[in-house]
Amino acid sequence: MSDAESPPSYYRATATAYGGFAAHSGRSSADVVVIGGGYAGLNTALGLVERGQSDIVLLEAQRIGHGASGRNGGFVFAGYSLGEAALLRQLGPDHARALFLCTLGGVELIRKRVGRYRIPCALVDEGVLWANWFRDAEVLRARQRFLAERFGVHWDWIPRETLRELLRTERYGDGLWERNALHLHPLNYAIGLAQAAAAGGARLHEESPALALERAGQGWRVRTAQGEIEARHVVLACGGYLAGLEPHIDRAILPIATYVMVTEPLGARLRDCVNTDAAVYDTRFAFDYYRPLPDTRLLWGGRISVRDRAPQAVRDLLYRDLLRVYPQLDGVRIDYAWSGLMSYARHQMPQIGRRAPGLWYAQAFGGHGVGPTTVAGELLAAAIASDDSAWQRFAPFGLASAQRPIGFAAAQASYWWYQLKDAWKGWREG
Ligand SMILES: Cc1cc2nc3c(=O)[nH]c(=O)nc-3n(C[C@H](O)[C@H](O)[C@H](O)COP(=O)(O)OP(=O)(O)OC[C@H]3O[C@@H](n4cnc5c(N)ncnc54)[C@H](O)[C@@H]3O)c2cc1C
Image (cartoon, rainbow, N blue to C red; front, side):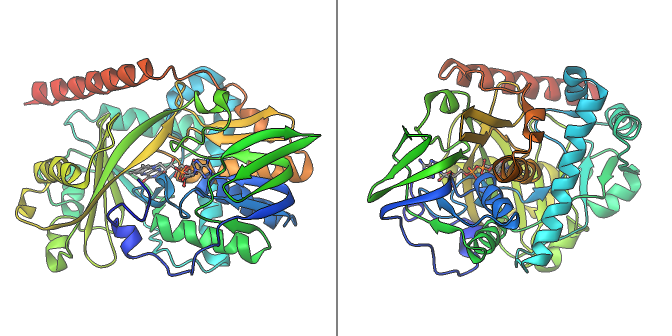
């Protein structure tokens, strides 16, 4: 569905006006062509600009932030879709620590850029709460201990009684507070990145899908509906909205949907439920995630599915979830509901690398992409601008096929399995 056809999300309805970027036309050349106007592409373009390179073209099939980057929960925190313990098991302590800590660098860079470029994206630097859906507190203790001992990262313990003051629900046990985290208006953040890259000389084009990619001498040729560009480097950053340009890169991805809705402005009722400015998610595999918005609305997200659902179906599903936690919101009006596609690899880690000389990719950020896409942009910009090899830290997480369509069935089955396990645990606790 194109942006023109889709009903507006809350983010689209409150987007910064920026006049748009003209569609691409004509024959030209550039040092770098970036394909995809989500965070991965925008951060690469801006990273290049910040390194003194401006001969960059960025092509976005629809509008900036059309994909996950303009639809997400707005949580900005450390880590990846793959949990820290699995990262450590797979890579060993030094490598795992280095990869985890660079996402903290990503969070910090987001703060800095929002300040430096004055991006009006309603950034709230009040951390993220991880609320225990269960009474058994061991999952919190184990994670708190693990992060402190292995990575030197401290999350604060929030006892049940304190958490009840912050989140006015009987639903949760204790919680952890990731202080070094924030939340923001994701689409306005994407638009701000785009404007910063354009101000630095990058040429951005919306409504300009890249239709074909082929070798041209030592470089590459990218065709659009009304033109073509020859470039030394091409960066593919199309997330779950598959580009259809290079089969090995596309087939490594499973596009998975997740859903968001936004209530009407709640006024004083908001503090009767969410009495904190932090963003919140819970300890289940299929967790709810939510945060207060500046105009007293509540943004509520959750669910993972292989199906991209229509707004009414999203609304119905998420409304039930909302009332399980905050029954006091019964009857509240839902003003917006939408879905978005995340891109997952089988190994649940980002795929950042080089497929062939001059052909780069950054994808598979899953549901935990705002920080890691910032890291990816930095790594690829440094690789292209100065031959930096730090991107090779992601080499263990390659382009293994996601095996669509069987991969979809496997992903849905494992989601149901974990959902069942969580339901069983909840039932046993009574
Ligand atoms: C509903 C939802 C909630 C989420 N919540 C969070 C959260 O709270 N915190 C968090 O860290 N992460 C969250 N995520 C994940 C995060 O949003 C993503 O990991 C991240 O935005 C991925 O960025 P991207 O640039 O890789 O992909 P995208 O943002 O999807 O961008 C890809 C772009 O490529 C374009 N494109 C595709 N093909 C072509 C082509 N041929 N030519 C030109 N352009 C093309 C698409 O139109 C699209 O705009 C969420 C995701 C969703 C969907």
